[in-house]
Image (tube, rainbow, N blue to C red):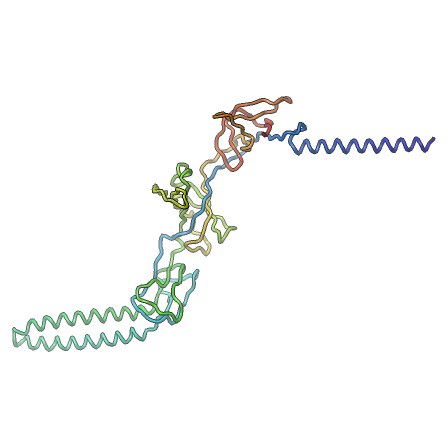
Length: 334
């Protein structure tokens, strides 16, 4: 008899445990879906909203110089590489100066010969007025010879390619042992303090952007160091890229970046267009539409009510609700 009674008590306990487990699962499912009725819900919350335009661009420099030389010759030395910091007057490359020295020597001899002819012509003109034209021609020859000498000396000096100002080497277009042609861009030197950003705005975003707006800049090469700036120029001329109409926006950094940045590096831009503080927010998926009307389904006192709403700014999945609901309202999702 006692054994039967104990078995019955054990069975009751097991049934109670199983029932509690079933209730727990049911409650968990109700919480996970937002309501015990099986429909997902969301609560109207109050928060801050920041709408922004995200696009891409690249670094450019207001002050950028292509270093060239009037000399031609074989490159004997390349002293710098891309990204190197240089001071004004630093040697960037050295050309073989033997041809230039030979040109200078020849030009010097030509000047001496022209000056000797001029002296002789002047002596003749002093005693014979008919020799005056010859003296004038000799003076012209001296001037031409001296100009040729100055050009030869300039080419000799050009066998040393020097940094035009303090900056960063952005491009190297010569190599040791290669031939260099006079006037060809050998290096590009930029002023890092003059770096700016150019980006492309989609035509639908153009009306929301104006000069002096703030922008966040992330250089792809330095993703962990976001930078700030503001819009300093906004083009009114449309361009077509890949079938999309875009406008160029220029952004200047608030402070010179302390990074090894180079023109042409890619960037990601985020331009804040709207900021709202302490507004009512709902996810965009909670807003339903019927023609031009917007509405939500609010659950109040266990009953679902259709409430027309007016929305404002948007940012990502968040939508500002201007009217129709209040903080804490429970909204049924579609």
